[in-house]
Amino acid sequence: MIVVKAGGNGSLNMEAVCADVASLVQQGEQVVLVHGGSHETNVVSEKLGHPPRFVTSASGHSSRYTDRETLEIFAMVVAGRINKLLVERLQRLGVNAIGLSGLDGRLLEAKHKPALRIVEDGKQKILRGECSGIIERVNAGLLSTLLAAGYVPVVAPLAISHESQALNVDGDRVAAAIGTALKADKVIILSNVPGLLRDFPDESTLIAHIPLAQAQDHLDRYAQGRMKRKMLGAVEALQDGVEQVIIGDGRVAQPLQWALAGHGTVIG
Image (cartoon, rainbow, N blue to C red):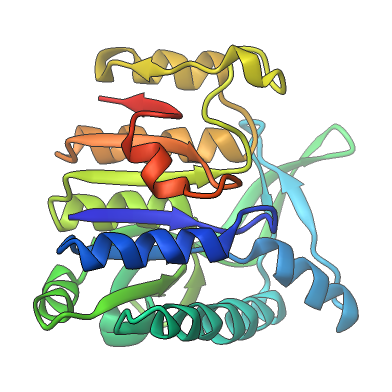
């Protein structure tokens, strides 16, 4: 069982990702594909006159502010266009893919974060109206049923709150949560760099292997921006029972085969 997270920043080779998924499925592997869509959401938001807003939390973490209008644009782009085009591409490759968001069948349940504590102009502020959350439960039974029937779930990173409100959730942590719930052998998180770099953006400083015992230290010392979220997802998955997490290069011709061959940052 392999859980793959791909997409989000617009620079990954999604045709190659889908081709690799098809190859793994043809070899008898069960695969769940989690995707993002932040780049395309930004583009569409600009065109619709509601440009994205990024804020910095009190802890220094940068993230998208997701008000209700932004959430609806995100859902339209990610659960609509991107998800269905990926399903179409996989179907053309002979994979019986099925597109889902975390809303469907309460696949992903999350705790709502209605407000953010941010730093703006050097001052701490409370920003309300936030429509994002943190994954608390995965409907593993639904995914297991689909996988057993021969489907490949393609999951968009939206979740549902305990109050049944749609929420934006981080795709890397979605992959980690799904990997944990399904007791996956591997979680592969594809990025636009070869893996975790000791001296970003120098790709020659790739850290090839990190034992689980050192993963938190590497997260604190080297990870930043999107890579920090990827590393956080990796640590969570490994601590909860996933055997191995690989942060691989999503730009290469065979990104999954490349990662499975040990290229990238192997954690665990």
